[in-house]
Amino acid sequence: MPAPLDTPRLHLRAPVQADVAAMCGLLGDAQVRRFLGGPLPAAAQAMHAQAYVQQPAGTTAWAIQLRASGQIVGLIELGPHKDGTDHELSYQLLPAIWGQGIATEAARAVLDRSRAAAALPRVIAETQAANTRSRALLTRLGMAELHRLHRYGAAQVIYTTHP
Image 1 (cartoon, rainbow, N blue to C red):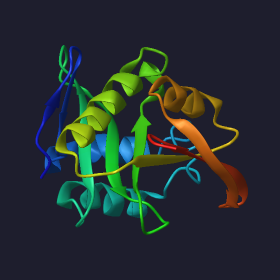
Image 2 (cartoon, rainbow, N blue to C red):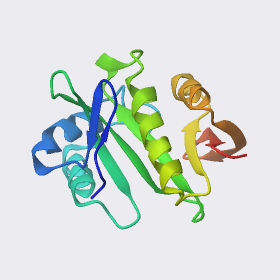
Image 3 (spheres, helix red, strand yellow):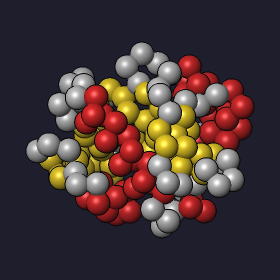
């Protein structure tokens, strides 16, 4: 289980069984999943939510919780990338909090933790080229475009912390 991370507005902690309904809400939301292959069917939502609670080997996931209200507003994960070499930062947040800097705050905390632990030489993130909001977030975090490829039926951009 990952150690919790606190920021001025957020408490990032390991997802627990009580978070499954909130996670299913994220996994089934068409806006959240627009660039992630679309909303998952109900059975798949439950299966994926349980995987976040169980934390597969090599993966660290945090529930993003607002400190002021205790509401779970997203998930952020650092886990093995498909390339088999790097670790990937990924995130999903409720549309109601988009544009408030919550994703930036959460992602910066996770990246800072990964740097402080000095366990990862670099972190990458993969997003669809059409996902301009996510690409802007990665740029704000100081990540740089590494390369582009075509995967999942769309143009993808790989960002890295160290080009």
